[in-house]
Length: 317
Ligand code: SAM
Image 1 (cartoon, protein in one colour):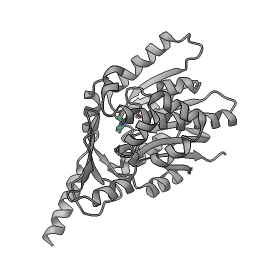
Image 2: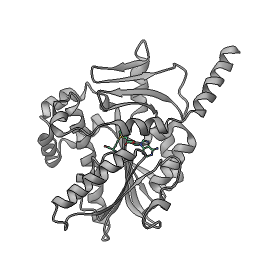
Image 3: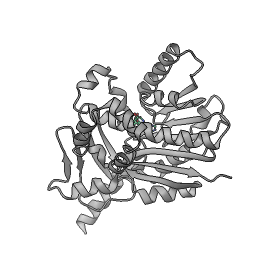
């Protein structure tokens, strides 16, 4: 009885806590390091690999959109960070981008990066953009837009959605923000840690943690994870050190179905890599970023193998 009461107590404490500001503070403190520093980092290969996964995913969805649409493509980058995907949007020839993130410093850096890109380009291949600092788990984003009736062809949410699974209310709001303004047949794509793999690896360890010299994942309790608020702590060399929440994928799929979205792709990073690397164009992009064999070795040691890519599409009518 006592331990049940204690469990109840810790659960309600957990429910009352809100990690949004901790997450925002963390990302705000992160320094933008130059390419030279980054290339010396032990996680250089992983960052390149993540970028490659995102490039392939974004590129393929934009191709599909171009095949089915004649109108210019508008994109919502939900949890844009410092604008690591700006170049991908430029290459993808989109017309308008809304970048939004909870961390104000990141949004400022994203805006500066965009302005720099615009200066260097001849303006004819540059999209227009707007930048919003907001907690996407707490409020609808639309009143903050220059045109509050704007709709999108694509919402991209890269390594972000798991932060919202702290509670049902938060996850519902984030997913609503992702999909509510999609035009018919629009896409919601992203990447997020794979809850199955996290649990598998943690359960195999004595102290509920796993990792290597680069990253560490730590669970606090052996009790069965709840659907929301299933917290673990993730640290990655010099880049991330924050509480995150497991995303039970069938649950997210159901929540998105309620919003009129249907699952069209779910692939572990390792599967995605093995499949896409067969394509000449994708392989040469990866080779430009990293030596393939070195990457293959690093890949299977690393945390990000435990992530998944996903894509959902809205109904066409
Ligand atoms: N999408 C970027 C990328 O792929 O490089 C950044 C990914 S970073 C791992 C996670 C981002 O999610 C951070 O920039 C963080 O501030 C943002 N984030 C976390 N919780 C958020 C929330 N509730 N609303 C909006 N952004 C959030």
